[in-house]
Structure formats: structure tokens, C-alpha cells
Image (tube, rainbow, N blue to C red; front, side, top):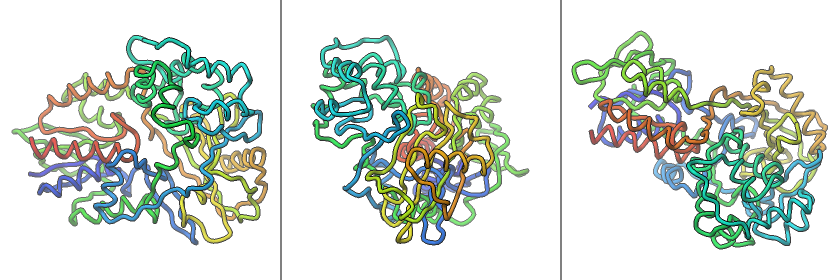
Length: 452
């Protein structure tokens, strides 16, 4: 059979790879001039610079399994200095030990933290006494944290940590679609803190679960490159946006780059708004529902310094609460997160700007963005030196926003999409934004087409 794959991000590549394994003849159409979507790696002068995602979550096995299958070696974060800082009153304060993304598990560490007032600390501890909630339907992440742990837990820690993952507004972000574990902890244990202590232990590392992060040793692009090498010659068609799909005589006719392809099946692994435009002529309601999935834009500014110019700060970086009213979302010491990212005597610092709450920043020119980030780094981290290397990367409408009711929206999309013969959807817009999620979705889409 002949299958067209629309979109050359990791979901589309995973789908194409799986289809080739199953003996299909595949043509992958990519509108841009490169594969990988938001994944990209620049290797220059001993620096490994990620333009987009920089890690896989090993807790979700699909990404690691694919790397192992392709022979892509992985590295882990070092055991030491897995610390996260939070900007508070214009200064960097360490996140208390045992604070697991949304909630504390170590009351002694919480009591000694300068991040929260005593009123805020007591309000968080009250979670162990509050009755189990039973809100109807889905709930926003902001509503859930405020209900269980109070305003300070939300504003000073949960909001910046979650925004750093989803570049989203926590007041609109679906709890069920993004952090269902915490909803389940409340349901099973009657308390988020009790549930965390029962399942993770009070001595767990704070902040992001860095122990679960892995990355290709040569950078994220090596996963894309390995997938591309496994595809037969002629499969990939770059700079060929798909402009239309027709259904004719039991087959799909794909229009791309002024040419046509007759295909037995189609996998659309492009953003939801692109899929909506392509499918609206076949199902107007499906096209509309796909178009209701919002996207946020963001940018990264990467700066290289001599180690002597960067203050010794144990840890991997810091996050910035929205209530601080600053111009960056977070900052990562990329050179400390994974080994082999910089030449000796250097540090690589990566700052994140934009997202759902500050989309205006992404539209500023490169020079202005660099100036903004350098000013913030000087004020927050004491880095005043002129960087030896600067890179700015933008990702416009790249991060799908999982608003309240997202899972119901996706279920309705899938129910309508299955009515279109030999068609499957894949990508970050539906059931997970991480690379393992996209790999899983791409493989599932390929299998559904191959099995009919």
C-alpha cells in the first residue's frame, strides 16, 4: 500500500518509520526545508545548542525505546546539583526539598523556605485536612492548586513550573489532560500531600523530575537524523506543503507542491489548525473542532560564556513566576543539565520567553530579545559579561494549549476522524506534547492505517 504522511516532525517521522517497517510505500511531505519540527540542534565550536526540546522523559518509554532501536546513545542528567530556583522578590530562592511540582512533601524543608509566608505554608499544610474535592467535569490546573494548596503555592511555584513545561496559562490549562496524576492522588488519598508522600516519599528531589530526563548524547537532532536515515531514498519531500486532499475511487489524492499523489492511506502529523484546513472539505465539524485547539508561541535565547564570568550557582536553572512581572519565563544552565554540551571552561545558558502570557515578546527582533535576556540575567543571576556566542530561535504557534475540556474535545475529534476511511491523526495537539507522546501517537497512527 501507498501511504502519505503530512508533516515531518517527530510524530510524522515515527509514523513513516513504522509504516516502512510494515512494508508500506511511504511519501512524507514536509512544508519546511528541514525535518524535525521544533527539534533542532546546532553543533559549533564544541557547543551543542538545542533550538527546541532538549530532553526526553524516560518515564514514558516510547522515546527511549525508539532511540535504543535506532542506536542513538543517551545521556542522563548528573546526580549532583539537581536543584531548581524560583525568582522571588527579584532574587533567586531555592525550591524547598521535596516540593514535587505542585505540592510539598517535606514539611521541615517547607518551614525553612523563604519562598512562602507563614500563612502560605500553613495553607499548604491544610491540604492534609481538607475533604476530598469532587468538582464536576474537568478543572483548570490553577483552580485545582488554589483549592487544595492555596494561592501562594500556585503563584510562587506551580504556575512557573507548569508554564515552563506547557508555555501555558494555568488558569486555562486542563488538569485532566496535563497533570492527571495529581487529580488521581486527591481521589485515592483525599490529599495531594498525603498521596505524594505515599507514592514518592518525602525525600524526593524537588522541582522538575530531573532524574527522569535523558537526551541523545549528540543532541536532540540525532534522533531526527537517525529516523531519516532509516527511510528509503525518495520518501522525504521537503518544501512541499500539502494544499489539499481529495477522496476518489476509494483512495486519497494528495495535492502538494503542484503535484499529486494517489495514496491508500493518509497520516496527518501536522499542527491541528493545518489538519483542520485539510479535512474541513470532508467534514466541516471535524475541521472546526481541530481549529479550536489553540497554540502558543515562544522563543529561546541561548548565550555562551566563559565559566569565570558565570556565578557558581548549583543547580540546573530557575523559573520566573508571572507575579514577578519579568520578561523571561525560565532559564536553564544547559551546560550543566547534560554532559558534553560545551568546550572546557564554558557555560551555556538558555532563556525562554513568550508563551501564552507574553506572546508579544516573540515578535521583538533578535537584538531586542538578546538585550532583554541579558538584562534579566544580570539582575537575577549576576551575569554581566558579554556572551561569546548568541543564538535566537523562535517557535510560532508551536505549542498546543490543552484548555479545560481538552480530552473531551480530542475524543470528539477522534470520533469524527475515524469516519474518514484510511485516515489517522498524530502529533502534539492531542494526547501529550512530549517527544515520547508524539512517538507513541505516530506509531499508533501508522498501525491503524496498516491494519485498515
